[in-house]
Amino acid sequence: MADKTVWILDDYQERSVSQKAAPPTRLEKSPAVAFSLSLLFWGGGQIYNRQWGLGFLFILIMANVYGTLAIAILFWDFITSSLKSVYITSFEVFAACGIFYLFGLIFWAFNAFHAYHKATQARTDPFQGIDNRLLPPLCSALIPGWGQFLNGQSKKGVFFLIFAMAGQFVLAAFLLIPLFWPALETDMDRLMLEKVLAIAVILSPLILLMWGFSIYDAVRVCLEPLKKEPLRKRFEYAINRIRIKGWKQAVVSRAKPIFVLGLFLVLSLTLGYYYFPQREYVTMLQSLRFQLSEQKMVLIPDLIGQFVQTISPEAPRH
Image 1 (cartoon, helix red, strand yellow):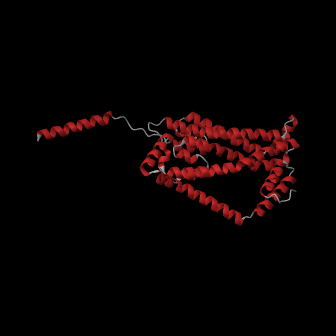
Image 2 (tube, helix red, strand yellow; image 1 turned 90 degrees about the horizontal axis):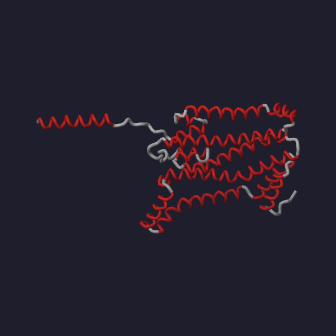
Image 3 (spheres, helix red, strand yellow; image 1 turned 180 degrees about the vertical axis):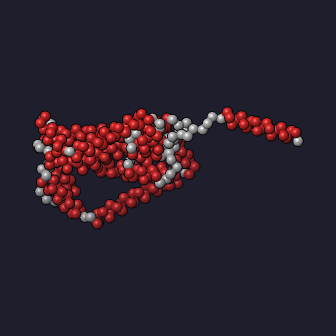
């Protein structure tokens, strides 16, 4: 009986010592939360990472960027008329605002990636993404690349985030260039902005395609967490899967989602062709071309005319 009491006492003492010697647990920061906060509010992720000075600096930069652009839009007539006395044209003011907005987009992406990177560095274990299958696809539907960062795939996220920046610049071009078009004074100024608008038109299909692919990729990764692994390990897993299941079963099982996606695209194109015949597209494009020509545009109406002739050679040229 005495032996049993001594053993319990020793065990209690050993457990007490081990509990006192154990270091206190630290709550690790989530790179997904840091990235999301900075993406929505510049400097939010830095404050979440306890980088107080940097976070408040980024907040001031955000206020400066959006405040300057808002003042330029609201007081456009006053600013351009005042700067004419020092021989600064409205086109030069518009170009300066465009460059300023572009640098703001670059800084917006940098501030979000910086918050993600710092939160990742502070962790003891590598970040493998969040345990949620619904949130990454929804976030990628809002901003391409956001879902990839939530899944812990930062390199892929940066790739899609570039298209998100391009999409915001293209959207701004579509909204603002027609608005300020009547204020342009010379044909050379109109031609320069028309080139920017033409580039936006050409890039828009690619941006929409990459936007959809970002959503698709986020869904696939959420449904198959193995895709979060590095490419080398995924390649090894694929080889092992082929060795175990054989070429036919391994390849066919992986090709089913691609087949379903291809079938969906074919069905969409077929329905679009029958419900919106080619003559409807041609009529709509010719009407748009006529309206833009009345606005003294030259480059984009010419591109529309060439496109119409490509898809419908029998359509009238004028």
